[in-house]
Every structure is written in C-alpha cells, then in structure tokens.
Picture 1 (cartoon, helix red, strand yellow):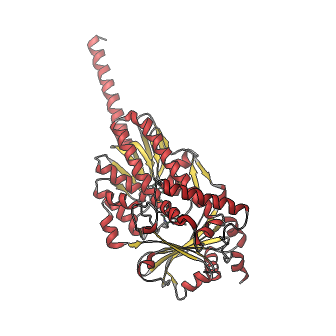
Picture 2 (cartoon, protein in one colour; picture 1 turned 135 degrees about the vertical axis):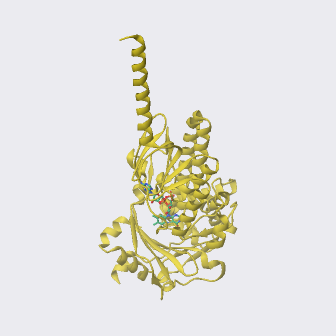
Picture 3 (cartoon, protein in one colour; picture 1 turned 30 degrees about the horizontal axis):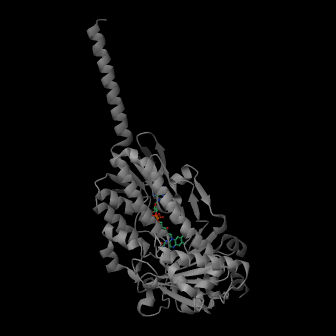
Length: 450
Ligand SMILES: Cc1cc2nc3c(=O)[nH]c(=O)nc-3n(C[C@H](O)[C@H](O)[C@H](O)COP(=O)(O)OP(=O)(O)OC[C@H]3O[C@@H](n4cnc5c(N)ncnc54)[C@H](O)[C@@H]3O)c2cc1C
C-alpha cells in the first residue's frame, strides 16, 4: 500500500475515533455544567441562586415535585441577611409570620420563660420568620430559576462517579456531567451514603412525631408567633405558629422510649399531649389537619464535608437535633459558604486546595457549637437555668444570642456562656446549685398511666 493511501486510511480511522468519542460523550453527558446540586431544599436553593447570579451554569436535581410537606418551619434571625441577599426578603415580609423570640416552659406549666431576640446580647437581627416549608421551599427554588439555574424536578440522583475533570451523575432522568457536585440532599445524604461517611451521635438517638393543627390557642400581640418549647422529663414538644390559622406541633423523645411504649406514632403524639397540662390546655378545641409524620434516628454527622470535586451542605453534611431550630439556618449558611468556595474554585482551580478544607473547618466548628447546646438541653440543668426566676449575669440573653445564629460571639457573650456551662457541670454533680431548682415535668410514663 502506498504511503498516501496509508495516511488517508489512518486519517479516516482517527477522525472516526474522534467522532465516536465526541458522540459517546454527548450521548452520555450532554452539557457539562459548572456545578450540579443534589437537592432543592434551602441549602441547594441558596447555593443555586448565588452561583447562577455569578454566571455559573448550575443544574439542581430535586427528586420531589414541589410543593410538598416538610418539617423545619422556624427560622433564625441570622439567616435574614442572606435571605435579603438572595432577593426573597420581600416575599417573606409579605407572606410569613414574624417571630420575635421563643418560650421555654415545663410540661406542667409550673415555670415559663420568654426570650426575645431584641434582648439578646450582640445579635444583629432582632426578628426571624415562621414559614410553612411547602411554600418557602418552592419560593426559594423558583427564585433559583429566576436567577438562571436549571432545575430538574422530579429528578433523583442515584450515584455520582468522580474523575479528574469532574463528575458524572446517574439520575432518574439520565446522566449529567458537571465540574463540581454540591450535595444538598438533606438527610438522604447521597454522597455521605455512597462514601460511607455518616456517623450517628450516640447520645442523640431520638424519635419525633409531628403534624399541623388548627385552632391551637395563642397569645396576643408579638407573643402570638413565638416558638414554644415545652419540656417534660423524658420528652419535649414544639409549637410553631405557621399563619393565623395553622400551628406545627411535634414531640421528641428517646427512640428507646418510643419502642418500649409499643404505640403507633398517632397514639404516641395524642397521649403525650393529653399528659401535659400545658399542651392539653392550649389544644382544647384544636383539630389536626395533616397526617401525623414520624421520623427517627435523624442526628448524625459525616466524617468529611469535601472531596476534590465535591462539597456537602445543609443536612447532607450533618443534622444535630430539631430543638433550637438550627437546621434551616445551617442549611442556608452552609449553602452560602459552599457557593463562595465553589465559585472561587471555578475561577482559580488550585485554590480549592485551600477553600474546601476551610469551608469544612468552618462548618464543623459551627456544628460543634450547636451540638454543645443540644447536649446541654438534654441535661436537666438547661431548663433550670433558663427558667430560673432571676438568672444571674444575663446568661439567657447570651445563650439566646448564639441560638439566634450569632456565629461570631464577642467576649461579653463568650464569658457568660462559660459560666452557663460551668453551672450545668456543677448541676450535673449536685442536684441543685444556687437556687436553680429542677422543673417538674409530666413523663411519658405518666401518659401511659392515664
Ligand atoms: C423533627 C424535626 C423538626 C425540625 N424543626 C426545625 C425547625 O423548626 N427549624 C429549622 O430550622 N429546622 C428544623 N428541622 C431541620 C430542617 O428540617 C432541616 O435542617 C432543613 O430542611 C435542611 O435543609 P436542607 O436543604 O439541607 O435539606 P432538605 O430541606 O431536607 O432538602 C433536601 C432536598 O433534597 C432532595 N433529595 C433528597 N435525596 C435526593 C436525591 N437522591 N436526588 C435528588 N434530590 C434529593 C429532597 O427531596 C429535599 O427536597 C427539623 C428537623 C426535624 C427532623
């Protein structure tokens, strides 16, 4: 064969090969996005809005059609600045209830303390919102579309395969190719499960039952929209007003107590309400308007929050406990920080070596802070200190500041927190310290006895 023929055949073979590779890659992946986000809850929507606004090509895969029922309705003041930046504050002002603070009470109603965000030490924003999540999540995701993100819904991500250039996501709607993946899949934790990163908190093996009600009694004025936490000796309740009519009510107990009680979730919730004089009193004439949702074993953290081509945000990174309504705050906060880290990595790829570990460290530190509070809540002393008639040194106002989402407490908050932890430690040793007496709460055992 002459050299000419040989070169011609060789060229055709090469061209054919190239075409095959191109065709295969376009069949497999189509467009390569800058970022693929798994999950369109608050974490995913926050990141999608910020990244799309910076001109990044973003695809959000959300496995459910919105609106859908979701728990987690009480927001924290610190999220307000981000919600402003996302351009959704106007919608919240128009449609959501303004929350001024909360109330902690013992289940028998013997001791009650209200706390208002405007009394907290060093808290920038003085109010927050109570939202119906079906509405809130859809509004956030609509905003992401408005800002230029592509939202695929329903579209479940089944698996992500990573390589040097990015990731290929296997979804219920076909394959998607992206340079980076941000996992915001909530407690489904797609990457956490795929890489076996999830670790439970042994001391937080809890079970929760919740539903929406109409006709729950409220106070008037700004107290009408407070979050109410009612603490029994082995369980606690939340009451979160959603609008003029509806209230979210839930109960949390040890998962072992739920198993030992051998009751259905509905019975568990009804009996616990009936056994608490405070709850029962507020719910005279109330009517349940949704089904009762049970959820158990929800507290965990992943051992890592990043890899070379991926980050975890919101519940997909970890979930501590519902007690202080930190879930959506952490979701929005980490969605925002993850968006900054990813945008920086897309601008200068080598910076991801610094940005991703910094992101993980920051989120881990914040989670540790709230974990400490949550663990304190489940020790008896927390409610004692909070509901004491004259708590010294304005300790509740300092605790309130951090619980409002103050991510950088100053010295005046810090030293009060140290005293707070010291009192709790002493309380654990001796039953009663400096006049903080223990709350008398109704127990689940009491509920069963009735
Ligand atoms: C009992 C209870 C009470 C709570 N109360 C509060 C409260 O009062 N205030 C508060 O701030 N927080 C509360 N939380 C926590 C709050 O619900 C979560 O922290 C918050 O929703 C986290 O937001 P996210 O965006 O990380 O995840 P999510 O809101 O869970 O969103 C994740 C999204 O990912 C989607 N998804 C999951 N898997 C896939 C997949 N494979 N492919 C594609 N999409 C997927 C889901 O459909 C979902 O829409 C509570 C939690 C519990 C369990």
